[in-house]
Image (cartoon, rainbow, N blue to C red; front, side):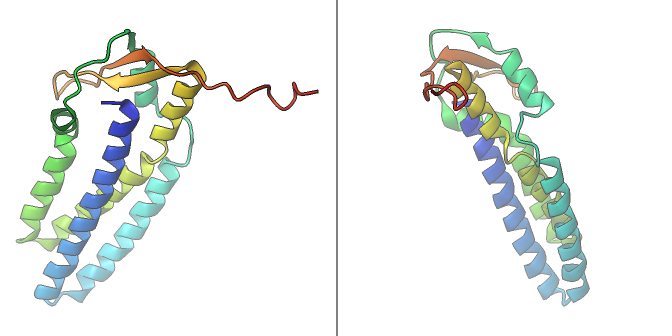
Length: 175
């Protein structure tokens, strides 16, 4: 699986989890006739959105992504391409957090409200990481793939030859 696809999927899955948990919060607070919970939760979600937007404002790769790219091994063969298993082995903590929060929210709707904020922070703070990796891939003419490995160890990448993008001379070099 391409690394940029894993990063995009992480952002989208986190945003989808936040949406589902927000719906659960609103439905449960309506069932319990607790409008104060929705108001407090909405305030937390706005603060979480501001925190996530602030953390994800930079367009360069985060330190963990940069480390994974730097440590990538070069190869000429593509790694194993089992996308479903790769996503499950890499995104299980996110899925588990969303599932546990959803289950506990049927007893305490505040759990889903709080978890929604953290999912929003995660989604917004990682929203530019795929662009940073794509820029490096285009610059160096490589493609980064995620290798299969232990789901509790850091991600290992391999670097394969790709198509180098040649956009012509730079504007200051044109005559």
